[in-house]
Image (cartoon, rainbow, N blue to C red; front, top):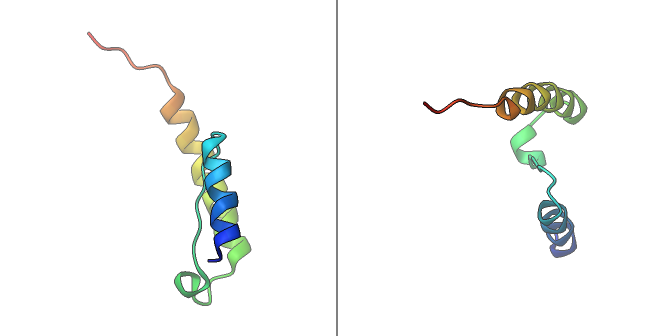
Length: 57
């Protein structure tokens, strides 16, 4: 990953974005778009669960 790409990612994180990145080597022959779609589905579910209020007694 190039320095300017890392800077963009860090800037987005500082603004509150959640970032998930897999390198081409990590993806292998898995289609990147399919992985993105799966991450969005799982991320949306996780956001709902993690935003639920918890009760501490």
